Image 1 (spheres, rainbow, N blue to C red):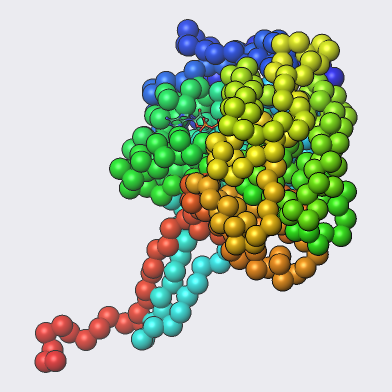
Image 2 (cartoon, protein in one colour; image 1 turned 120 degrees about the vertical axis):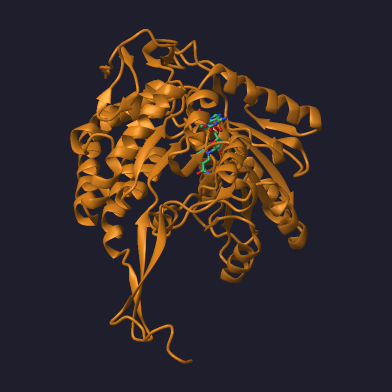
Length: 491
Ligand code: NAD
């Protein structure tokens, strides 16, 4: 299917897409084929300033519109994305290199997410309580202009996680997509522009160090929300601390996936653990990249896991049956290969994959074979985020050592457990330092279930009702029936 794109894209500021002019631009390139897709404006501080000003000016009317009207518009956006979802998914498959079957699901998730927040805002009620001779009302008010910065790995979901809660709560937004994956967000901007008043959602394109930094540092931005690496998350957190604005940070992960010897169905667990590690080409913050398998079933499990990895179809992003596709760019591909070699140099045993795969018609692309390494938890490949289709397999037999190792990482985003013993499941879930623990089904995420990190995986929760608290602040209003007796009266 051919996708029609504009030749040039620019920021969306105050309801206008700005593409004209002699500005610096960068290329959007299909990582699989090397095809030039479009050129995109690299916004500078002045562009960001105009976008923030537009958001600031649109704020009062957007807030005054009221919850119900705002929720209706978010629901309309969900309908529009549903209608155009196939096209948007095709754009992402071309722009990011991920399998079309996966990015299609991203849009289904995004649609549900907008609908969830359109609904849940109606139950996000203010509270009131009686005080002596009157009432105290706790009213949640929007924060103002939100500066939102997202990564490239799942543009549909990342944009939905940011926009939906911020907008229903009455904030206006300046969002910066990643420079490796801006096209679908810009096309989403066209849908937004047809539904929302000008200035409510503004998009700034460009480099993180320029446009992203200018956005986070802008004095009129009252809330920061960042998804990306822990390294850049620290920079954004530092800016937020200096500026005394709240920041939601969704950062990296190195999640443990734990298999007990009492599992009922070994094949099903092997299958789910394969998915956990290498879905999204392994370019997923929540990937289960450290697989701890109990010694009693280790040999049988290992054999089936190797076969499972070898069975994975690596193919073009447009191939409906591919399960692993092209990494986002050559730099990321080389980084993943370097990690594989580092692991082998550290003493890990290569059990499957390990190299670059060739895909006909996509010779430009960096495809990595699904790679399985028998490793120790202390190795760098088990401590650092690789962001590619690479799984470290680790054997365990002592439960306390298992728990210590599972928690022995700077990250704490997610974890998986497979067992048929409810007690093992619940005890282990409570001891793992992770924001999400999935028992018997990895990545079991549903709207309304909080998602976010412990430790260096972030601060705050998205995907849930609680997120609305992060996009609002409480104003206490007290009401008395009458003015008190004179202050000068004898006490
Ligand atoms: P990144 O941190 O390099 O970039 C993320 C965004 O930050 C981009 O838009 C980039 O332009 C911008 N940026 C870069 N430097 C900046 C600066 N100095 N100031 C402001 N903005 C700046 O991350 P990435 O490589 O694009 O994404 C992969 C990372 O994202 C991984 O670590 C992954 O785990 C993480 N991630 C986390 C979640 C989550 O929910 N926890 C979800 C998806 C991805």
